[in-house]
Length: 106
Image (cartoon, rainbow, N blue to C red; front, side):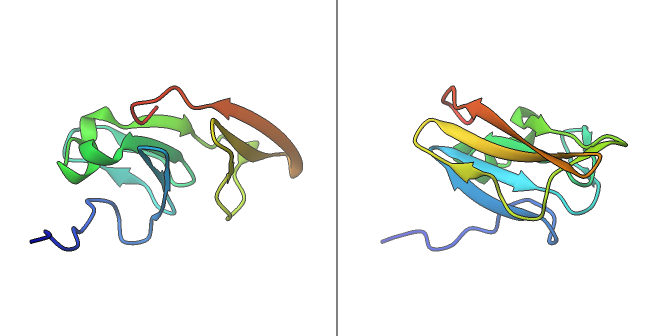
């Protein structure tokens, strides 16, 4: 029999999406994990789906962290087979960045 649904150990106000074997997490508020690191609101994080389900949050990779000048729009990046196409707002001007997927949730 199947195991059913699993609650993901992410903040209630975070948005999640999948990309290959990774879970992307977009934070709306700061997040301090039990593994120690604190991530800023507006960050885009990546972790393998298996690690996330197992609660191995020490393996999170920061894909984007906002600065005084830069942020991400509300929507998730566009995904192709091997790339994330990310819109970065830099002083309110849109800039596209192409990030290649390396595998293993990274």
